[in-house]
Image (cartoon, rainbow, N blue to C red; front, side, top):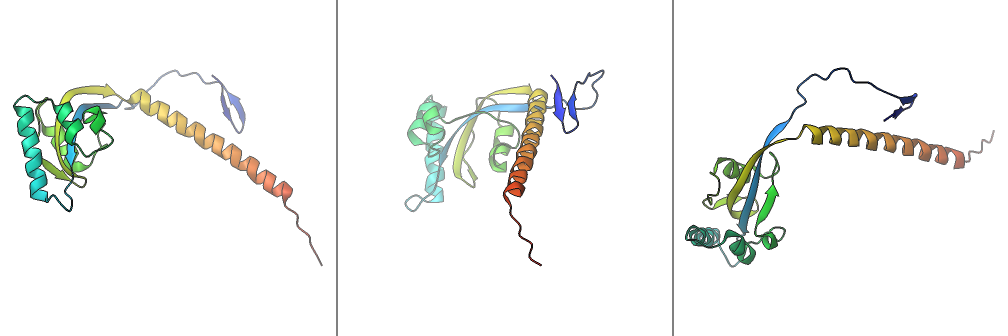
Length: 169
């Protein structure tokens, strides 16, 4: 595919590829239940409520069903608390630390984050190669930047063409 630049079109041939452009990340498929303290429910009551939900799950109750019934995270409650596959740095540190250190399929103890009290469960872990995604993202950014520059130059030229300057001496 030809590449366009200010100097014209270019055809490139890649002879060799070097460097550490590979990016393998550990992903977690995680679900959670979030409950927030409020004017009616104190921090301690909120934590105790989550401890009760965790006990129900440990006794065989369905995590997804309890998430639908109890979670106050409106974005994930209907999906059974599922946050899907995560990438490092996606969540707040308290959440990430718990997620990274819990064994598979185990339900965490309640923990606090800036959003409220959580319990979570990691259902799967995988190592995923994000090299191609990173390259696509970089290429997309370059194309967006190039298109923006082209449109900016067109707009500036239109402004200059429309400008009327009267010089009185």
